[in-house]
Length: 436
Image 1 (tube, rainbow, N blue to C red):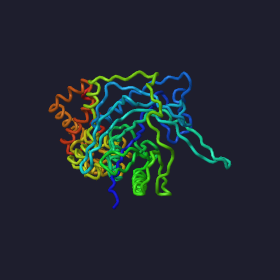
Image 2 (cartoon, rainbow, N blue to C red):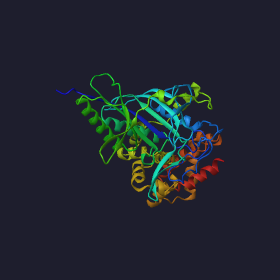
Image 3 (cartoon, rainbow, N blue to C red):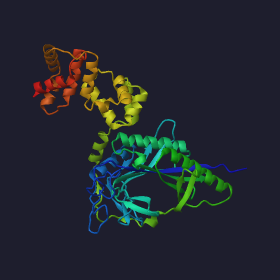
Image 4 (cartoon, rainbow, N blue to C red):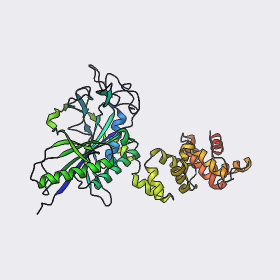
C-alpha cells in the first residue's frame, strides 16, 4: 500500500513597483519597450564610487502592502548585500533586506481558503535583463540594464498551500491588492509580477528537509501547471524510494513539466552583510499609524460599497481591478450623488466612457444632453445656486478656507434641485465665481 503524501507549498512573489524613479538612483524606472541601456547611470550600473540613496515612495509603498496584509511593521529596518555573480547583476551583489525587513508576521484570510502566513515582505533592487538572440548564425546573450535598480517587493509566505488552486486564488488576490493600492501594475506579461513556488511532498505532518524552487514564472496558468507536475514528479520519486534533491527548476510548457536548472543555494552561500552605503531606516509609530489610517478600503470592501450604490457585482469586480477607473466612478458620484451609478459603471466597463470623456463632468453633461434635459434658463440656474448656498453655509465656508473640492458636493445638491438639468461645467464655474 502506497504511503499517503501531502504536498507542502510556499510562495515567493516579486512585485515591481511603478515608481517614476529607481530604488537607489534618479533614473526612470520604466524599462519595458524602451531602447536598451538608455535608463542607466553610474549607480544602477554599479560603477566605482557611485553611492545609492533610498527611494522614499518605494519604502512607503511596501509599508502600505504590509499594513494591508496585517503585517507587523518593523520600526527599525536596514538593507543588506546579497552576493552572487551573474551577468545581469552589475555590482556582483544585490541590495536587499535579510535580517531586518520592513514587514513581517502577517496573515491573509479569505472565505473558503486556508489562512496564509506572510513570513516577510522586504524591499530590494531588481536585476538587469538577459536577452538571448542569434546574430549572423551566432547565439549571443546580451544584457539590458534598464531594469537594474527598479524597486522590487518580495513577499514570502509560509508553507501553507497544498494545491495549485489554493496558490492561484491567493496570488490573484495579491495582484488585486497591489493594483488597488496603486503600488504596481502587476502585469505578468511585462515582468511586473513574477512568481516562484517552493514545493515539497511530505510523508508526515512535519515539514520535509528539502524544497524544490520553481523559479521566475510569469503566469498563473503556468505556475499551476508547474506545481502540479512537480508534485507528481516528487510523488513518483518517493514511491520509488529515491531521495529528492534540493534544487531550482524551471517550467517547460512544451515538455509539460519542470526541468532542473541548478542546485539550490542556502543563505550562507550569498554571504549577506549590512549595506555600508545606506544607513538603517527608523520609522516613528505616528508615521506608520498615519499610513494605516489613510489606506483605501480593501478590494472586497470596495466591491461591497459599490454594490450598495447599485453597481452590479460583476461590474464592480472589474472596476476595482483598475484604480483609475475606480477613481473615475468615485468622481462621478462626488459630482452628482443622485446619478444612476449602475448605468455609469456599465458604460465604463462596456463602452470605455472613462477613456472617451476624460473629465467626469463631460460624461455627465453628455448623458444629460442625450436625455434632452440640458436646457435651464439662467434665472432658474441662479435661483437654484442661491438656494444651495443658503442651505449649505458650511460648504461655502470650507471653500473659502481652501477646500475647493466642496464644489462637487454643491453641484450634486444643485442637480437634485434641478432634476438633473444644467451643464455641470457651467454650474461648477458659477459656484466658483460666487464663492471667490
